[in-house]
Length: 268
Image 1 (cartoon, rainbow, N blue to C red):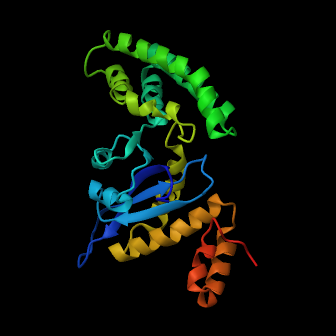
Image 2 (image 1 turned 90 degrees about the vertical axis):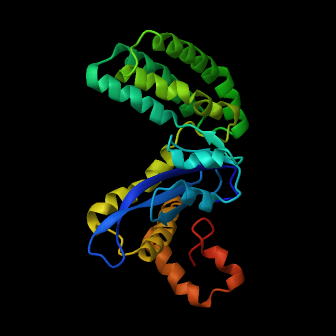
Image 3 (image 1 turned 120 degrees about the horizontal axis):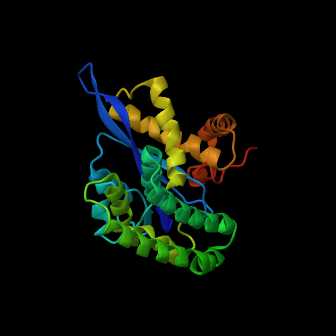
């Protein structure tokens, strides 16, 4: 994962049984995944006792690539140490979508129309090379974003501070540089949806297994689910993958252990 130039990151809460007590407290699973444009298909989950930014820093270490993430403050320290922040256009869109649902705002509708134009460019560019994707973004997405930015600045002067409309506009305007960095590199995605899809099994699982019994058990679950979800990303049946790996593991040479990873695994 840390050999990738672009990584997605997200986090979700999981209840964990407090040591020596009969109650739970909120722990977090951090997810790091490759992009839809990467040759490598993988996700790594990191189970941590809190949402403190130090957990992201510990995982990423001296990695200094491009990190696609939301506006969570826990990633900020990394941006001061050489990591490049890539904003999530889906989060920006969601602010306007919620505004439109709440009061049928025409301003929100106009913003949504412009953002849908950006996603249409992405649909056209999905299967292109990074260089061709960069080229079509320069040709089609740059003019849309230029007009959108000018329009947002003009609208912001017309709406009262603290209003829902102001908050939706401010989210995009304050993060504009991060939101538009994807234009400069065809290997960078427009949003963080890739990792949000990979973190969904944890959100669904919470209602079944309720909590992790300890920090150690949470880390074990994260390791196993990293393999299972990465197997899915590579088109494998997780049961067939795990059964084969556990069968071969006792006799697999340590020097060839990497062949059992989901992105290199081939059933025999």
